[in-house]
Image (cartoon, rainbow, N blue to C red):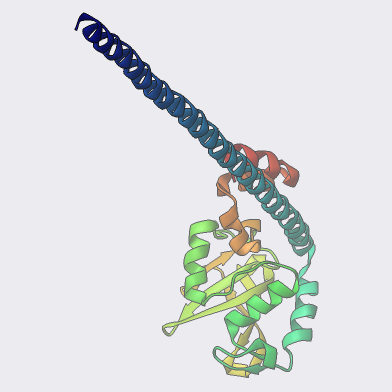
Length: 261
């Protein structure tokens, strides 16, 4: 009887020990699984984060390269148009007269005409003339151009300031009109200009006193006007203006970089 109890006791004891080890083993196995799972997760997260970082770095480099290409292209365009603008400033009245007559002496006047068909009104004639001389001039109606000029440019207030190549804007009988200045008669305060007009179905040559009530203004063709929509790509027009006045076009690179253009 005592022997049976001893055997039962031993069986129970070692059974409990075995069960304890089995439970500990399961816990150990669970811990091992957790550690392995954690390490795998860390590895996966590491690969994912590394991939994202590489993508962001490549994207940043690509954007930087594209931005540099755009900036370089902008500089090249501005330098090109700056040179063509300087060439325009050198033209005399006789040069403008000759070029205007060569193009428009036999054209047909047509409101909103197609320049490709040799049809012009006053505004398209100015647009064609300036673009033929390599301006990046933006085409628009005379009234719109007048508003733009008033915003961008100071009008000539004295006949001595007027020079060949200026733009003259006239408003008469509720109609807007534009012409190109070819000269002046200072003593009589007269501006001589060329235009395309319905009155003579083509190119014409007229004159008017600077202070006439029909003259809305005589405006210089500034570089800001010459480069047209490229001006939008320069963050601050005043910076460009300072550069043009000092005739150091290459400094625009430094200004653009500092201002984040």
